[in-house]
Image 1 (cartoon, rainbow, N blue to C red):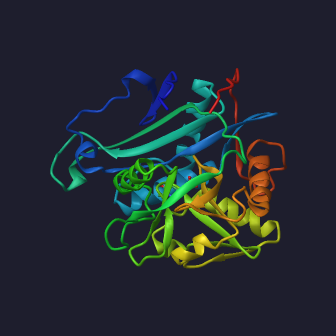
Image 2: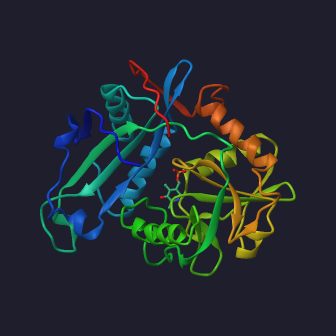
Length: 313
Ligand SMILES: *Cc1c(COP(=O)(O)O)cnc(C)c1O
């Protein structure tokens, strides 16, 4: 899906024209993948528009940067305000927001300390995916997620996405919508950019972060919603074969939201339709995000956007 440009991009404290947000080919990030980033959604609502879990996303950006020893010269509040300013300057909702901190143009040795840190925040239109749409046919990837002593899985880092690309391309080549990767010990980890949940006998399971899964904010939202619905939720190591005999399986992520899975390696999950519990969780998730249910967990940051563009997914 090609990006639909907006008017402004936030760069180190200033809003600059979209076309001016360029970097030099000799920037450190281009050669070594030295970036950390976020993906956030802003939903349009009957009352206006709101960003979903903005402080949690920007705190994770700060955490990802800290893991890579990148000192970001802005506070959490300043970064959140920058996101709101960018959305309001562009006046587009619903939208996707992409903050990124990268090692820029300076030195080109592996040691990144001589390269400046540049922060950009872009947003662009992105419509809603319809909840409960086509459930996905996925595979278990032949690629593993990052071993814990190689690349830190808790950092949402650009370089980690080389692994994600291998998972995604393999799935695509073989006719699947997505791949579920195992960790180096053979246990279920996550998709290329989504966390995974299974339901069996009414109980919800998801791998703990120690199985090389990212601490997804949608994952956390689903854990919170599920407990609130009175479901039993267990973060537990999941063997591959439990995927095939689950009653329901779904992905979570800012992009994926709550996405049901229909089959894994051509084994049909449950009766091949989005399951009842998945639907209850998705209803609650979309109800809050779309402003149709009370924001009982305090997840929404309102933004002022003039004319609301309606964009199809
Ligand atoms: C971003 C991401 C997710 C989903 O995280 P959310 O905070 O829910 O968007 C899951 N796995 C990986 C590898 C990711 O990069």
